[in-house]
Image 1 (tube, helix red, strand yellow):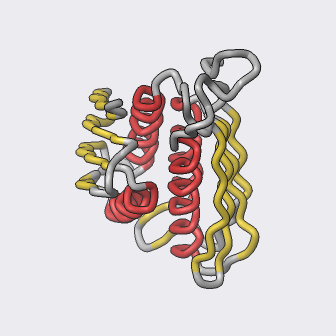
Image 2: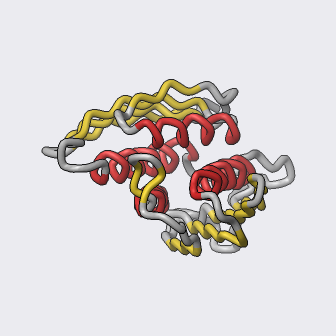
Amino acid sequence: MNRVASVTRTTTETRIDMTFGLDGSGVSDVQTGVGFLDHMLTLFARHGLFDLTVRADGDRHVDDHHTVEDVGICLGRCLSEAVGDKRGICRYGHFTLPMEETLVTSAVDLSGRCAFVFQVEFTADKIGQFDTELVREFWNAVASKAMLNLHLVLHHGGNNHHIAEAVFKAAARALRMAVAGDPRQTGVASTKGTLSG
């Protein structure tokens, strides 16, 4: 099975080109114009063992909001397309990830229904030039377009870079588990017989 998806999304605010492969080796080529987002997506691909290529051109003279959110929209759309009808996958994934003094849990259900819970508090408005509130906006966009349940919980932590990084790494690991094949699962992991909503 070739679980790869590509999307091009053009608005008056951004132009995003993305290719996303679920069964990769963690290779990424990310150029969004937002340095911190590039860093987060690179480690997301590495820890999920996803192959990811992103090119983004956004209205960054305004701020980074549209670029970050729209990249999240595209990632959600690619994830939804790449996972297909979800036959034979685990469906659920969870991971609790330590990042030095920080501990974050991510839990995922590829249910076909969107629910997003973000219990993560940052202690500053910015990490360098990056607005910390955009971490939430990014993952909210992913969850809404991929139609999945995504819970992100910060147990403790103080360094904002570590918190953001732990969120992206934990989400990657949980998604990696959820999209993995289950050799005992011949259909979809649902008594409804479908995971399409």
